[in-house]
Amino acid sequence: MTGGGPSGLVVVDKAAGWTSHDVVAKLRGVLGTRKVGHAGTLDPDATGVLLVGVGQVTRLLRFLSATGKEYEAEIALGVETSTLDAAGEVTATHHMSAVTPEQVRAAAAGFVGDIEQIPPMVSAVKVGGRRLHELAREGKEVERAPRPVRIDRFDLSATDNPLVWRAVVACSSGTYIRTLAADVGAALGGGAHLRSLRRTRVGSFGLGEAVAIEGVSLERLLPPAEAVRDLATVTVDGDLAVDVGHGKVLPAGALAEVGEGPWRVLGATGELLAVYECHREGTRKPAVVLARP
Image 1: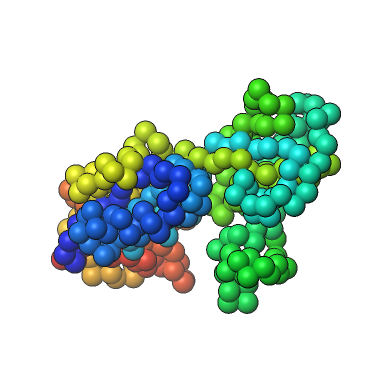
Image 2 (image 1 turned 30 degrees about the vertical axis):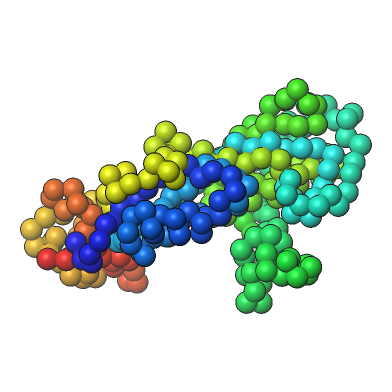
């Protein structure tokens, strides 16, 4: 493995009040390395699964960011806010006590599948070279192009408060749950905001594997091969393993790969050698090479 210092993935159960960057900064000190990064930002008020890469795994984080997510949330009907969540200022109120459970669930069902969302002004999306949340802090609002996302599951259940609904959402990367909450309110003829948010899963990494930031240690790091376990897998040895370690572009089929990739390429003893992806003229090229001969 190239590079010194620790390498691996830690699944953090982020507490409220921490930014994703706060978690990274803290773990740099705990783990004794500057090479720490995260996949998939969580807002400060949100809790739950945050994937943190260390050492060589920071180079693999883009493959983790692209995986599906699952959330538990509370949606409050009748109140719109400037940030679409409970942290913002109230911008509008609506009388929605007459909305029935059937109407709420029907509205939610209308968002399941492939949809388009307009990113909220408090997001990190860039418009004209500026991040939206930076513009929002300056009191500016700009036009944002809608983005395609996919909602695989959107289940709503009632609470003791008829205007507050618990939600379970399984969705593609890039989905804004606060936008989903606001859009449900609008679909019901009023408004809504996100009252709480907990991410329960990123790819196959769930809360069952997560550890509070106070419990993070070098011993909790999952190896690089495990970090990309959700990718299709091929195993190589001999001369082919040497070629992979050198980062050679390979003809299609040389890895005995299946599907469209990307593929994690493991050595004979299960170590991660590289991640390969499709290249021009049907070849396969390394996106990341971790082990060299």
